[in-house]
Image (cartoon, rainbow, N blue to C red; front, side, top):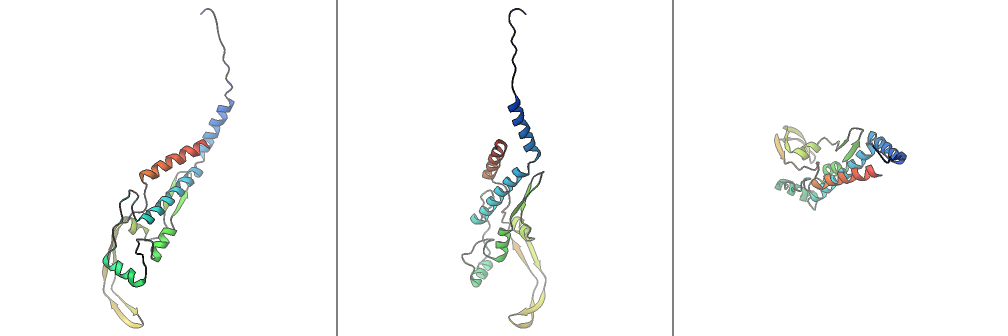
Length: 171
């Protein structure tokens, strides 16, 4: 080779420091998972407010017997999973638990699953007190509860998670 040679020296300290900080951040992702969990909990609460599944499908309507019962109890306006003490508790107990491996979003309430997935509740025959009367017999019966999914990711949630990841990696 004739002629000319050129030597280039790069000062890549700044780039290496930024890369090292990025690797450190990736090794401790709990902060990212906490942000994602908070966003999903908020989105899930919006599902309760709109009475719809994460994909926007409206929840099944109440049975006529449920509507009559709610009116008798003065629980109006009649909403799903929000007016009775069970619904309020389910809504209020939504939480996110971040870990180094991911985030879990849900409710610790045991009846949350039947509202998410639907199912049949079988009540046994029993006797008890009712309005001060002794030995009132109640026949066995079943209640079918339709699925009213509240947990899950919508397309908007997925976009939010991507934005959270982008912001988290850039900060």
